[in-house]
Image (cartoon, rainbow, N blue to C red):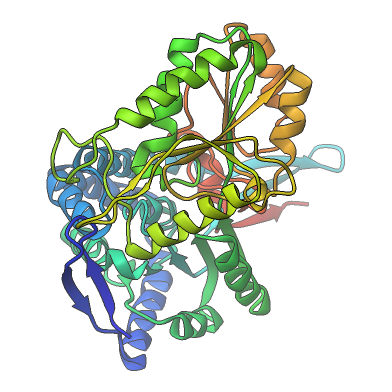
Length: 455
């Protein structure tokens, strides 16, 4: 089984990458172990300086990286550039803020006796990442763990093999130490063997619920730490006092960014009934008129989905939703011809008995739910297997905060769409996973938080 990169715009094969042999994998793990042991005597400041260099290398190669993402998985060129800048900012955040976050923290016990909490590396971390953000998902794991002294081995999604290879090359160019970061072209069976290796002490997965169950099970069997960033069916709440122009504009971008292929996309619009008619009228126009095109064209508004399978799966979900009583506000779907295009669809009147009510739609399909009041907003928002992120729109920030606090999710943004920021922790609850990435919390996920106790 080779890794195949197929251009989603043309549908043509770009390149194949052969799987590594077991001997090649063993050599990568040996190098990672050597890095882990060697870094125990290396100051954090030295790794921080190398991360600063890595941030500069990423910025210098912004266009190259964005172009590769467009060809591998169809990301719009402007969005690709934005992802690379996020990567550089993430790396720089840990380089600049990380050393102070790793300083020993004093504790007291038993009437004033002293203790110190130290943060130490634990070993190799396996990073299993998806195709939709082929760089930033990797960097979220690599940057904090490199600073700690944990080597990272990457199993990336096959369709973005070119992105994985390029990122590894740039890490080498930046001077990250041998064994610090290795891209592995491996099968599911091979990555299971990697996770079972006693030198691997952590697993970070971003992916589907099904993948989460498998990988978390493998990590549990080996008794090692894992973090899971899984799916989402995020709410975009519009209260009756919201700035409707802002809410409508943000609702479109929040659903169609990355062609709707984002775990934290605004997938369920929950709108209070007094403003529902105006909100629906506004989004219908924008969803209908959106311009499809080549992801390398700066004027393209909606790029193709990542694969033919993605188009087929999404259309099957839409058809099943309609067959079970959903109404169609905006008619879209697969586009005939070259490329894996899918015109936006907006559904409404989705009841709990409809399979779509609890599903995640990974593409440009939105749901509209109209409710009478704030209490109904919260009840509907929490009637979900997922809990990743969300947004609440209201001109009364205190009211919005009250609603946000009662939504069962890892993040809620007020009067702005969800987004990634190095300083803020990211992660979910329920079937959206566990653990946190970015911020100080992401730095500590795979640290040995060791307490030194003085008598």
